[in-house]
Amino acid sequence: MAGQQLTWLVTGCSSGLGEALVRAILDKGDKVIATARGSKGVSGTDRLSSLKDAGAAVYELDMASPEEEIKRQAQDIWDKYGPIDVLVNNAGYIDISTFEEMTDDFLLNSLRINALGPFTLTRALLPHMRARKTGTILFSGSVGTYYGVPCGGPYVGPKGLIEGMVPAFAMEVAPFNIRVSILTYGHFRTQVMAAGVIQDRNPTRLPEYEKLNQEVYDGCLDWNGNQPGDPRKGAELVVEAVKGEGRCKGMELPLRLPLGSDTFGIVRNSCEELLKLCDLSYILDNVVVRSRGYGTSYMTETEIAEE
Image 1 (cartoon, rainbow, N blue to C red):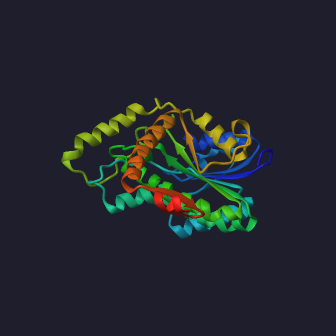
Image 2 (image 1 turned 90 degrees about the horizontal axis):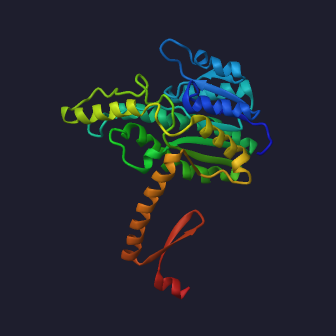
Image 3 (image 1 turned 90 degrees about the vertical axis):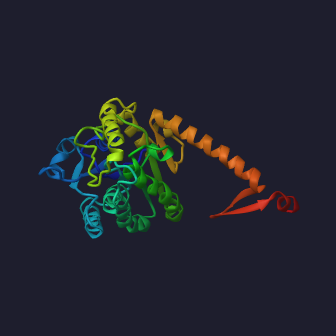
């Protein structure tokens, strides 16, 4: 895709990584439709006025909307702006709660915005991409899926669902020349942890967890603005990875793209710990794992010697 002008659809662009990504896309000479939900009486398009002035098309889209509404809006976007080459499922938000205090409704709301909404939007655009035999779909993951975050389950849980669903999805659509990748974000200097943005909306609270909840909430506020990642640099790398340009020239788009200096150490440590356990499992079972096509087979050393 190097040198080719692409049309992108990016959700959650009113600030942070979404806004940075739209600006990086425009800097590359590509077209982009930026979306955002309405908030506090301000329409989504009004919240995107600075991006519109920069050259982006803008559209109001709420990932918490019912499935049929998201599908209708996806078709409307395609009809208005033409074929979408790249979909970036960026919209999301952070709620905090301990596991015991969560209700089903509370967790489902986070799932709807952080995972189910993006899945719906993707499914709505997929028939068009299949028909064209081309497309790129990006999902926002989180380095939090590689380590435990107290009170972070409502946010990290949906990201774990993405981590589990997307690899299978990527294999399913590869025959249609559709690429899929998870952007494994570390901690970037956005307003996602600012007061009034990060939320403690769980109506069920237990006194036993009051101290922990408060410590986590205060820690997020202190961390806000001090995260190591630069949104502009992260966004530029995403665009380069999709287009196969710059630092990513000649590279295939990976299934997982780690982003952020802190992500490197966290992912490496997690993988090293898992490898230790894999070695233990091999010793116990005395088998060798072989990948065969879409499946995996398990053979003992005796069976391998007899092949």
